[in-house]
Length: 196
Image 1 (tube, one colour):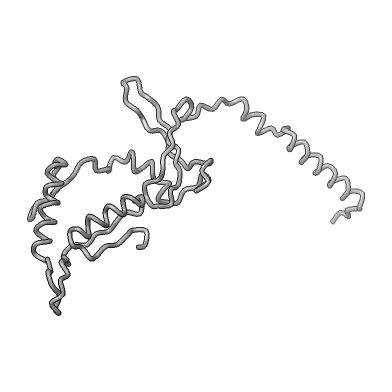
Image 2 (image 1 turned 60 degrees about the vertical axis):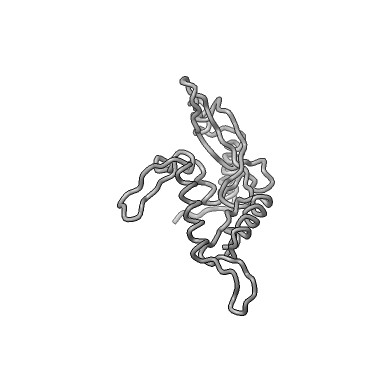
């Protein structure tokens, strides 16, 4: 085994420090070669639009990049966290990170679906049909389960056959409106997704 003197160790240390300093000044071969390759980013020239994540009430900011196609349609290129937001500082949770999939997934349901009793499959229906069906079902459930008085004869005017779960992305006003509407129908089972 060769012996290493203090002088050899000092020479190796100075040479290593010089190499690190030169690399820090930009004399790295890999960096020099990478500058010769022009990179065309997918979002270059795209329009930036700011939005808010739809999943919960935290209010994380998103940046959506869109480009107008030659046929006039708008193509969504990318969605990412907004680094200028004081709420999320550009970071997104696993649900927020899937915002692009929410918008562009081929499995996304774009119209109401209805499966009749006894049917084996779903069919596309209009919004008018869906809203009327929901109203009919709410009315039927409320009528079937309405309780006017409790066991002691106290007036309660409630329905115990329907429950409501609010979305965590509700604003205060939307939550207030939904609560008033559901209480007006006689619901007593109200829940909020943010607490679940």
